[in-house]
Length: 449
Ligand SMILES: Nc1nc2c(ncn2[C@@H]2O[C@H](COP(=O)(O)OP(=O)(O)OP(=O)(O)O)[C@@H](O)[C@H]2O)c(=O)[nH]1
Ligand SMILES: [Mg+2]
Image (cartoon, rainbow, N blue to C red):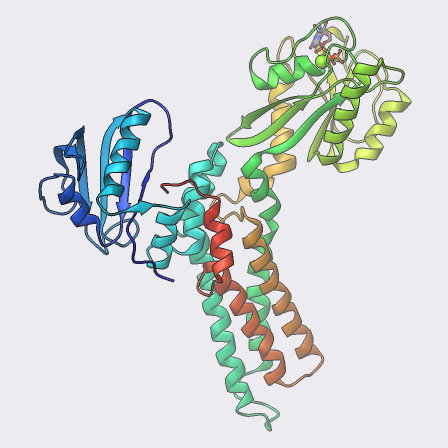
């Protein structure tokens, strides 16, 4: 649905800064520029001028303004971009002046929504803009930049073309139903379907890692009291974030920090020690720890290197299974290799004091969570549930296609599954999109983007 009105918003973050940017987009933009007393200049040329309020004529700020002409702009419409000084009041006064000159306030994400509706971006690129703005780790940034550069949509479009070719083969086959040996060998159709299916599965395989790129892999440091959890936490974070004492029961509450390991994000949590018969307040801390444990992507179980593990710790590791990383702490204080083992494979001797074993621990964390993404950096990473849903739909439709063919159903019937798979990919790209999908995507944006 196209809205002819001209919208405006402050595009920079609130607060005091050297500069702020206020933008308008829509057909009234050129007229607004004139009403603000900005001199005429060719499109895309910066002009330096005193911006004045359109009705009072009052001087607002010394600004730099750039006019863009449709369709060569971010939104694909005529736009006006004003860079003013970065005080929160100045930016607001510039916005007021632009609105008084004929614009209305933009809704969240409305600039990017217009860019999408005008064909400047596909839906995955629009989502990438949001991901890029929100990226907190270099790995997420890399994924967003690649998606913005059409990494994902180019791949999905290629798969969509392959499905359309497949539909062509099927249609051809339908035209020659009576012949035993139709013009298209059945293996060719089956092979093409299997090929697309394999590629869809390849994309989906990285989806769990993609979702973790957004918030970081929740990594909980657990263990008995006084084993050195907070010390390990601090060593990984890189500064003294958690309190460390020789007293057991020091940490009462869960403490969180996001760390980057080779640019991949981990949400690290230090917890209260797990022990029986703790005092009431500490008991609450342990409840917090238990709550985190059930959510955790990984649990680093700390056991001192200089004593054999207890049955409680062995049982705990068993409960955690593949999510457990075992760290034998205070390795500097142990003579030789750690006492006993927890029977769950690899154990890492680590000293928070000397730093011994920390690089190995970081490597294990990366390996357990982001191995696929790290090995296949050129493969687009799926970072959103919406993408996962569309790809899964396409995968299931293709699987149904192969199943109906195996059952020997006529191509007219089995072929509908390929059409459905194609539609699922088109939905991912935003080629067929319902208003409510757009509302959901763009409402997550800030005003002014
Ligand atoms: N020698 C040595 N001592 C350590 C190491 N890590 C921790 N410690 C000591 O072990 C004691 C407990 O450390 P914390 O990090 O507070 O242990 P915690 O598991 O967080 O303890 P609670 O929060 O009380 O459960 C402190 O006296 C630390 O100095 C280490 O790598 N080497
Ligand atoms: Mg502690």
